[in-house]
Structures are given as structure tokens and as C-alpha cells.
Length: 260
Figure 1 (tube, helix red, strand yellow):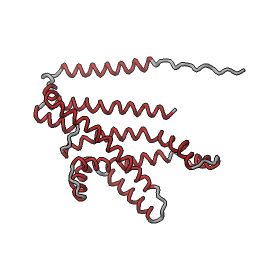
Figure 2 (cartoon, rainbow, N blue to C red):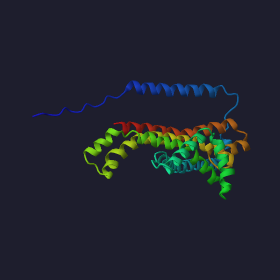
Figure 3 (cartoon, rainbow, N blue to C red):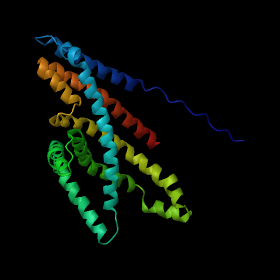
Figure 4 (cartoon, rainbow, N blue to C red):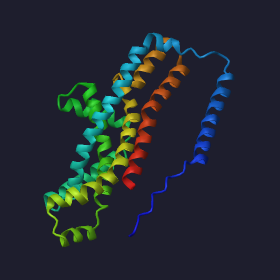
């Protein structure tokens, strides 16, 4: 009778924990050193006491508009991916050429310029004058080519040998996508998708030029009224880190989970 060996428990990584503790201690000491060398006191209360509700609203607006922009770019990016793989001789050639030219145009365009063009040129041409909507459209348009490349990398991970194996075992179309293609594509797709989400969150700060009340705009308003510029930027930095650091850790968790 063959008995299976008991699984060995992974030993706790004390050197790694010690290294992180040293890093956090180093950062704390650096912050303490900088804070004690200031010639004037921080007056964060000038911003938070009066403009706290405005900043909270901007913080929440940054999150929801980033989520909507991510979902929109996921859909539009997938459409561009379908355009890029179309095999039709005439219509397909046009769609592939359109996708390539559009991608190159976006790659050469700063996000701020794209937001302004969407708000003041593209939007009015279609009788859309809401700066919130046109700014959101600008974000979606800008991120879509990057999302298209994510789809290309994900679907190209399914090699021809895998398709041959699926044909050999007589997989139906449902079985192909359910058991082989979709799980493998999701494993490749999720980490860059989360990275693009982080890019959208930071890029949403440029919507301040449209007077959209996102995080950057709300703190700039508070700074202009209180003249607490340093305190405002420190608060802005901390609030963006509250969003992006958990997102970064979630990305690493997804990478570890899908790499098993």
C-alpha cells in the first residue's frame, strides 16, 4: 500500500518580513527628518475643516469615473481588437488599417491634449456639451488602444498546438472557450488590465482643465482659497496612494493566483 507524503508547511519568510520592516522604518525616519526641518508648521486643518466635503466628493468622483472609463475602454478596446484580426479582404483591410492609424495617433497624443480635443472639438461636433461626458469620452478613447494591445497579448498566448490538441480531442466551441481559451486569456489579461486601471486613475487628474470635480480639482480649489499649497499636495499624494497601492497589491495577488 502506497501512502502519500504529507504536505510540508511553508516556513514563514522572516528575512522578507524583516526587510519590509526596515523599509517602513527607513521611510518613517525620512518623513520625520523632513518634518522636523520645516521652518513652519503644517496647517492641514485649513483645507480639511472647510473643504473636507468637497475633497471627499472629488475623491469619490475620481473612483467612479475611473471605473466607468475602464469599462468603456475594455469594450472599445475589444472592438478594436476584433477589427485588427478581421480576415475579410476589403472591409477587413480597411478596419485593420483604421485600427493601426488610430493607435499610432493616440500613441503620439498626450492625454491632456486628448481630453481637451474631446471636450472642445469632438463633443460639440456631435452636440455634446457636457464637459463631464466629453472628458470621460476622452479618457476612454485614449486608453482603448492600450487595451487592444492587452487583448492581443492575451489571445496570442493560446498557441496553434493548443488548437490542434483541441481538434484532436474533439472539443466543441463551448468546451474550447470554457476550459482552455477563456481561463488562459483571463490569466494573461487581468494584471495589465489592473495596471491600465491605475493609469486611468492617475490620468483622471487632467480632467481638472474641464472643471470636473475630481480629486485634483477639489484640492486645487481648496489651495487657491487657503494658500495651503504644500499641505494640499501632501493630502493629494496620500489620497492617490490610498487608491493606487491597494490596486497594485491586488494586481500582484491576481498574478500569483493565476500563475499557479
